[in-house]
Image 1: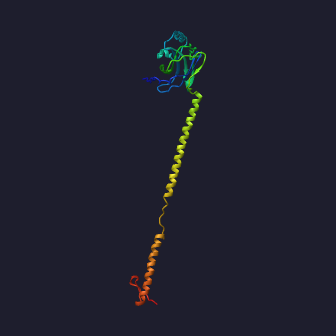
Image 2: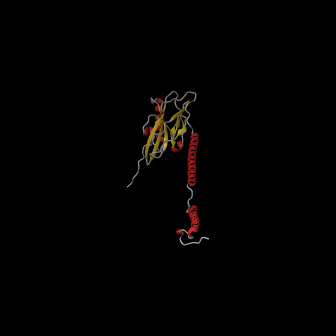
Amino acid sequence: MDTWTEIGTPEKPPKPFVNSTGPGTITVLIRPAILTSGPISAYFVVISTPNNNVTLERRRRAAANDSERVRRALPDPVEHIPLPGVTVAQLAAGDVRLARYFVVGDGQMYGGYENSPLTANILYIIYYVVASSLDGETKMNFASTDDPVAPSTGVVVTSTLMPQTEEALSREAIIAFGVVFSCLFLVVLIAGIIVICYCYCKDRRQPTSSPRPAGSSLNTSWLRYYTGNNGSTACHGRATAGADGSLPPKFGGSATIT
């Protein structure tokens, strides 16, 4: 009996962030998706226009003709999800290990898809798609830019919010790890000092006790007291013995006083 586990739909990827616009291009920041219900097989970039203009429709037809000639391992998200517009790039999972910039409209080929320059003065919506494929089953999910954006004319326009590059993100991750490790080491060090001080003070508060030896101060004091009383009694007996010539009955016997 054969059993298998069907992969689930991946989590939505982070929204693509528009970093800058230039002549025929829109630069977006894309980040890796969270791996939850299956392997991440690839990422796609899809562009669309609110009105689905004639230029974009021509590009879609050309892409459909290209897909007949190019055999792709993963389905086109425009047809698979489906999404409006046209796919301009397929990126391997290793290409988006960390946050990176992607220039929409740079005229290059990505995974068999043509990323041709954009048309000026036309608003575009950019979709960022994550695909998970296993045993012939493919699931996709996507996120899009918050608002449509158009390529700038002649001048590169950069967003006021400057996202971090891969190198900066890696450096920040290392710094964060170092800070956390230092804090943990400091906590352990302080705890160790407290334990050592507690044990030291406890030992000083508890003096060592030992069995009382024979002839200790208590026994010696008692003997001294008893001997003193005996001596005084003997002297008193000596004084009274002058009358009757014998020691007091307490001591027994008789004694001659010279």
